[in-house]
Length: 87
Image (tube, rainbow, N blue to C red):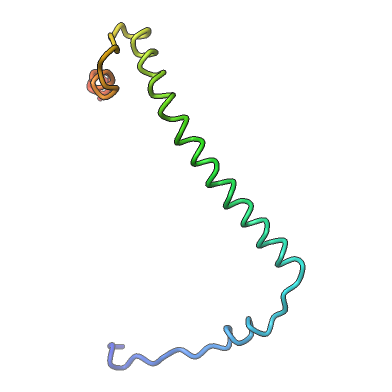
């Protein structure tokens, strides 16, 4: 079938969905999904803030574990030798 021969599909699904009622179940479902959405955003915010601190702490770990001096260097400079040896 080509584009010129395309026929629109007719469906009664939207009309049937519009006739459905709104019950307390639907209210609880929307409230629960909203709470989950808020908590998910909060989790991302907290994990983003903690990541910076963990990366700074990782520099100290790299210094202790591998003898690399991390003072005054960016984390990328410190971890670059580790990623080069791993691959």
